[in-house]
Image (cartoon, rainbow, N blue to C red; front, side):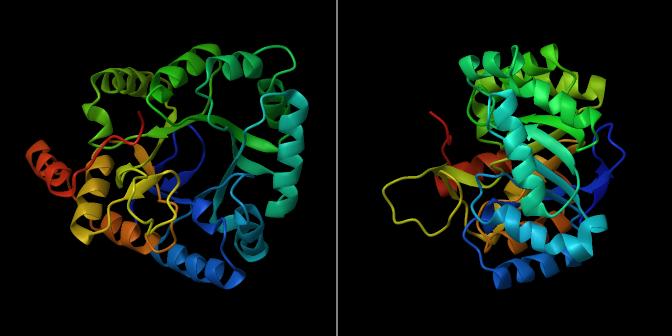
Length: 286
């Protein structure tokens, strides 16, 4: 079984591995049923999904009649306006077949212009607060991708007291000095406020290149060998009180869960440097 821990200051104790439902974007009902059995078998009790993930919300919704109490359900809105965010939430609740989401997240908030629109009058944040007040969303979070994510999350937390953040985190990503510095400051604030930290791109090998794509991970190529996946997952899990979101290809999910179940300690920097050199791991974001 996957280890669990408190999801920040929320009332939920989540599995340290969160199911990233992006992998259901083009899945069938049969695919989703197979994934559900795997998740239940490993004790995964937290799902991250979004309206833009194709079939994902609808397929997760098919699980909810029998399994609503088994999962903490998080979704997102990419809209930057009050009206747009409300439209997204109503659609998500309908697709997910639930009367509230456990966590509603501002999706990909790393652009300054978009950030100002969200935080300003008539912005999406007003809808988020209202949805929480109406008990349609229990907790609120913010997500981001790219090298500015940690710095932008610090800016967001300075403006509003979010319950969670989501951003890239891997050994290779932290070799970017500016990102490592921003990430360290963000972790300090999150620990001080007991804000949940969710991480992505744990098994990223590099950006999509010229080689034929074998996996459907979102805009990056993943590591493929069991050794590389396991060491990368263990390195991220070595950060206390963080959560790891699974990669966006169904074939990788069982391997990530197997690796997480075996976690005992973080690999050394020497081991990770050898891994970087052996597999030619590169930064995902320019």
